[in-house]
Length: 354
Image 1 (spheres, one colour):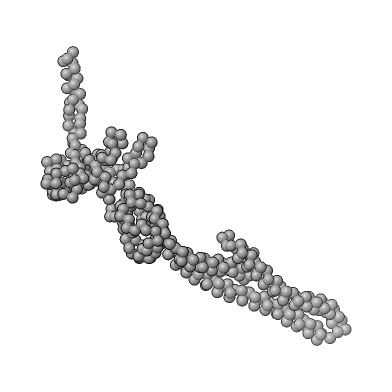
Image 2 (cartoon, rainbow, N blue to C red; image 1 turned 30 degrees about the horizontal axis):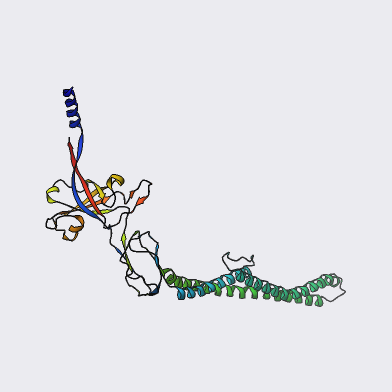
């Protein structure tokens, strides 16, 4: 029985394979350069929306500068643009004899004002033409009655010609009034279009300082080194306000391997990253790939206390890129991983039998 057990054990040991690993100590480092947050315009700090250590998303507001003055200037431009839009709508209807329509975003008071102006101008034109049209209608009726009489010779043709000429002159006056109205309206429309284009350009220029009063994160990362927190404090143009340490979809681990363990380490090898901040038995680790192995040894006295390595020894520097940027808890919630966290790395260098 013991013999059979030994046979099975030998067969199992021969076919079972274990990973050979090289271990090292390291830490999470930024995968790209730290971003320094500045402001283009000088301003007064109105609100600070983040604290050091906060993880922020790209586009998230970091702080707000006082925009009282710039907002007031922008509002002036917005009012002017709205006024010109309302006038353009009215003049377009007048110049092209189309239905009066206003942009839906215009204030009701502007719509009401220009609607009244439209009606007054239209009624004035119609009134000035109406009397002429009535005179022409009476004259044309008289011409209709006179023609048969002239044809019978009972009346001189000179009188008929005089009435026809007078009717044509009245029609000319009507046409001139209409044309004058259209020419004046079209000319005014061109002028308003030009003013509106300039006003929109000015408004866009004035909107920039208002938007720049909202200082946003240029990328996803961790807030670091906030240099001003005093509400009401003055921030100079170009002044460093804080730093953002980038957090990418992949993490970069800088690890240090002893020269006696580095012989079989190569770029492209698989690695397992275990973070000391999160219990490996509970949260697991991060799979990664060795992307760089330093060509020579180096001292690492600056990090020896954090990584618990002998500062008198030399090490090979290894960079490992992880396949994920976070761990998850039992509820599926992402656990934040930020630069500076300490990690141990297991680099798979081969396999061996039991």
